[in-house]
Image: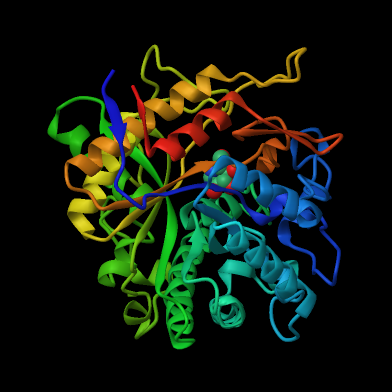
Length: 446
Ligand code: NOJ
């Protein structure tokens, strides 16, 4: 059993997001978010679940930080709810909202845990959606102002910031598939929203740097390992387009001020709504790249698909987690190497994990050997990438605790800590205890 080990000072962490764990949806002056509105509407979320209470982290953050300390976490990735800070998305600041995050940061620092906040993890103020949301260019400006306010307020204690969480997911699910709020299905708006989000990313990065208080800025990009179905030139080209679309649509503009070649025949600046000067604004020299990675896609050339000319096929006999995602550990290695080779920036794994059917046994314990095995295999691949030269600085398990999994409500448990949503009792799962050992030993036998 060789030891899988990690560099000194590796940032071992866990991740959560505001709407998924906080609850307190309308307390202390918080404004309504698009997720509040959506979850309160009929038939949007499985079983009618909402994030009204979620893990009640807003009230139980001290207990949760104590738990993080017990696990030995070095880093806590959480997100800041924009409508707590600006209930209307702009204009009047809600001091009580800022105070909550300030208390959380103090609590983390006192526990020796580095706060690693994300400024946007999908809970847009509803008031801004009423003005068009990410389909309205003004939103980019409001977002930059909100970021500036938060960083100015917490920047004496928080040094590293993530601007967005998974911009590819929140734009397309909101405006193309309509599965996420505001539930719009409109290709024109969806395409434009991606450009406005890139603009917002650039404006926010500038606003954050202007505070003079941040030492590192990045975004947590959703990434997937992409593999051609066969070695044919056509399948390989299709896989490349899909890689660009899935993994680079918000990274390539930041790194090089251009959109990657994802669409067959290209994507016109007119469809994106690019205005003169925009491609300068979207360019922001990130200090690091955040990667959220869970799975892979196997892709075949498909002339019927007018957009990407690509179709995903289901590999036979794939191992899957409860969510249906294929468990494919090599994907994390392969994506890290590709991103490291192409961009040469420090990398943080900002999310990785799996949902399984966890149950509390008669002794009050939660044993989740499948999740332990998932983490062993993915972490071994992260270590392999580091050995091959990639500068990976940290890893965040998704998630610290079971929480509100968007349209799937509370049906998908991703935590290394079990949350009983009736009593709010937390139980560290077997995987949580295993992860604590990994952190303590800065590695594991495998
Ligand atoms: C992606 C998202 O960032 C997070 O909010 C979600 O819960 C997990 N991955 C699992 O789907």
